[in-house]
Image (spheres, rainbow, N blue to C red):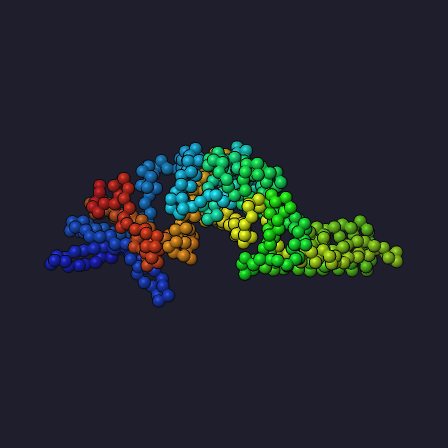
Length: 502
């Protein structure tokens, strides 16, 4: 980077202007890009600055250019008083305001986007901690969605609406089972937002008869996934005609229950069917190869001990548990020698093929169109998208705090970050379709507030604060979002003057 002078004559008077320039590589070769314009200096300041430039060039830019204001400058705290411990203590102050922050956000979503919260999507995830967290009783080992069973973790339950706006969240011990979390979350929502009639949407991991009974007791309505084992009860409906196409690759069928209290919705996805078929084919090929190998090994007399054969057979079935029930296997004796006999169970394989790509939904909502029920359930992907954003872009994991209240405050900060993330997402959807929050932030990331500090020959400093000039892509983005980029940032501290300061 370097300083460039510009001369201009206006009304018969010469004016000097300065800009900060950098050299960048382009497909057409090196080019110079103006980062920001520094403006005009009066004659006395210009004389000092010209002398400064000579020293600046001799000593190198790195000693005299700061791309970011100092932290102390931003916070109004002396730099030597800023440390990790002090910043961590700030977390202690935010946690007591969790409920008020959530309620304020809900109100703002309504004002900005007319967001409604009559349908709530509920899901859980986990986040692991680095360290033993001996002073945090919440941190326990449990089912790790982060594939880190070696680490302690906590469980996070998140509630969003159908558009992904977060309503609230709750934290649980790391060994909390999904099905045991719902009642606590329901009580929390009722305490904060009253006992309004709501529709709860969640997947089969949270479904239990007890949870559904509690929902009905609270006059709640639900639309939930069910364990795949229940598909067997609907084998006749699954094989019969009468499916309704709701998307090019998805079809559904309503199955009312005799009691009239609930309705089941059979769903079948072509994409999901192809995926499950490929998985079955891979495992079937693998188990058949293993069974054939064991059959030859026993048949040629290289393996004669029955106990060892049974262990080998058990290990093969355990490795291929997805398809093991499709095969009949046994050890038989023929001609005084042991043999391994196996064959495909045609009836079970036919049923496996019939249910591939199928899943079952369950609801106590009043009778409505099947396609509307399916679309409401698919909104659950918004909760899954929220967790992806929390874990990737917002870096909620891993957790390094070792105290319980600091860990909870860390989750709250991530929750607030997601609130900003989803707000940006909806602003972009309305004004810049096709641009994700991650793409927008990447575009804006090279826009800096630049502090230029230049020592003068008389022992003083000239400090100028400027915003780098937006690129055409940045300018287009900010225009769509109605954001005006200022020429400079100003704080309570005297740091952006155009004159020398002592």
